[in-house]
Length: 366
Ligand SMILES: Cc1cc2nc3c(=O)[nH]c(=O)nc-3n(C[C@H](O)[C@H](O)[C@H](O)COP(=O)(O)O)c2cc1C
Image (cartoon, rainbow, N blue to C red):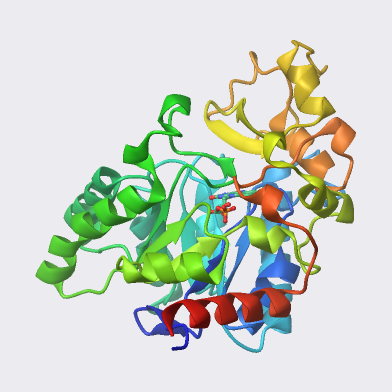
């Protein structure tokens, strides 16, 4: 049996695979367009998207605005198929501008987490009124519990008469910032299998009452076609994968960043307490060792990127550390990675990856 399609309302992707947005340069137009062209949902991440702009130091927000438009248009030029999404973290200081700009540029899906995107439908309404046309961008929050999914459905209905167009449910095995307390990460109650079920149960009454399909997408530790089959059998409509797409030629990060994944061993994966105040999963290296032994990097906040950053107390600037990693300067930064990154043994093309996922899925469901 072939992998099913994934629909958000009238928008349909041939494959039920979303490439997770990976901020600070890891998923830009190169990776997103390659994934879309293979039939998946390619996602550009907006955090620090204007980092290569020569005028960023003067006006970070204007640089990110230009960077986002450029990446969306570049992706569209390269795309022959699939859907284009944008990942926008709620904690970004320029959240409103990133959302409005994405809608105006006609992205298919906005995927938004790292906080509850309580006001997201308001932007859709605002841009529709402004351009005097219905805009088709679909709104997909990222949640880590059934409770968060219910709250969003209820609040969006009350305030905007709008239900989410889908949910990404992200479990504790994901890479990057995690929506859990450190002590919850290994607790069976919070594992992806449990919270996918919770979210499906939470959205079912809203689906039924309002006759709207709300696809639930599983993320965090999904690695093989067998894993995809497992979550689809549980009732999910698709998966979101990050780590596997880092290890592709089309991933927008420097080769050194990808090589860190290929070389990683299981014991290299670690949980850090990010300056943003959330735990994050990353690959241990000399930079993180120095931070954990108390080394403070001399820093001045120039990026002004996140509301939740405890700038005064932070031992280092996470934005700068991630920019350095994206550029392959891992001595001065670190790579976020999912719990399965140690399984990566080579860099492949997105086409090869998608084909192997399809084959593994077929073998499992035959
Ligand atoms: C390098 C890296 C950067 C990430 N950056 C973001 C981000 O900016 N915003 C976000 O919502 N999720 C981010 N994530 C999470 C991914 O989008 C995805 O949901 C997650 O990695 C899925 O787990 P997997 O890596 O095990 O497939 C990041 C993950 C990685 C590995």
